[in-house]
Image 1 (tube, rainbow, N blue to C red):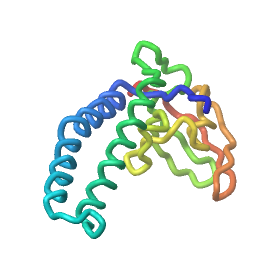
Image 2 (image 1 turned 45 degrees about the vertical axis):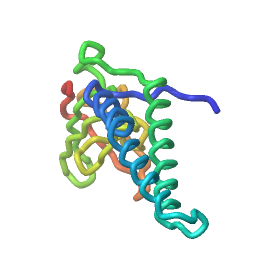
Image 3 (image 1 turned 120 degrees about the horizontal axis):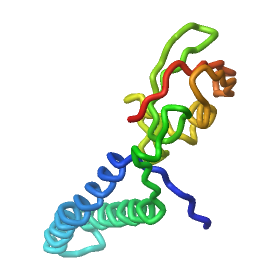
Image 4 (image 1 turned 180 degrees about the horizontal axis):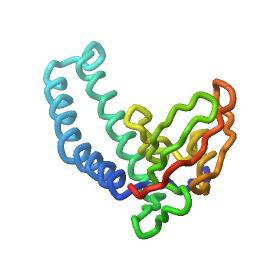
Length: 159
């Protein structure tokens, strides 16, 4: 499998590092203790607590492996790499929907940091990808699942 670059803001990278630390130092110990207690219940063939703890252990280890892979492929977008002249990962962009007149603000982040409910959209999402590289005054026609939107870039700032 070809691994691709995963873009992070410094804040997003810190969150990933903190999650790995939490999983390794706290969650691993909690799960190991649950396995130890479950082993004390005897016959493993009928021990649902043991099975649950082993499954949780596998999930924790899988998450650690996934996060560590993300770190290996991390590209951190520093503030100095950004410009208010064009949209990139790390930009905060204000856009106007030319069909509805609605104005929205998006923080363009890497896919690992995306959280649409917080206004953080991925550079790989239809809208994020459609806005990348544009400048103030540019209009993008972007295909989204609901059809096509026409967005005018009103303002670009740095996160």
